Length: 274
Image 1: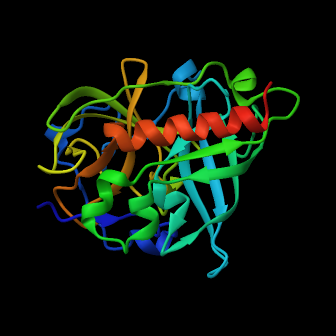
Image 2: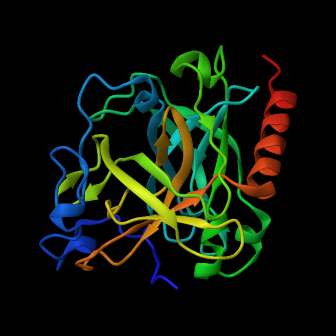
């Protein structure tokens, strides 16, 4: 079993002290201009798929912390859904509050608007059970955002098609997107990492692991793109001091995700039939 740690709380510069000089060996870095974690700033202008990604912000009602994750617009009939990691919405046994999505966020600018959440969804297993590495295949969540005059996809363009893969399936040529934050990252600019991913565990819906990318703080919830579709979200990574770091991706697979997507889309359409 891989040694996995949830990266949600690693949001401050202090969380990045004592890092290995290079967490991803140079021969494993596939991203042009990739740094010691395999990441590089996304060149401008962004592609349409990249513009669908943004910052997801939430408030922890107990600690008072502001949590930042990545999220991306996923295609739906309601045209109002955002895909992210479950731990960006429900963490330490409680729901995070005041969730907002900033698609296309770039250096403090919100060119596509600020979209507050009206409801969030995570798998029941993630919500009801104490955290363990066995829950990582269920670390996936959805956010329904309030339409203004028009739904979210009217502002961003069509959401990404979900690419569902079965346990054991490998994927080549993934693009991981996110807004890393900390000592060496601004937290305000979109970064990417190119990687190949293989199966990480042999039970449940399965997980993908890539050793070409070592997701830093702020990378949680960002999409893993594959040929214009979204195949998963960044869930966790090995400790950032690991000299052979890896990133774990939650697949879009199985009945759990399909049911959650259908239920959330139905709820949003009934609430706001635009």
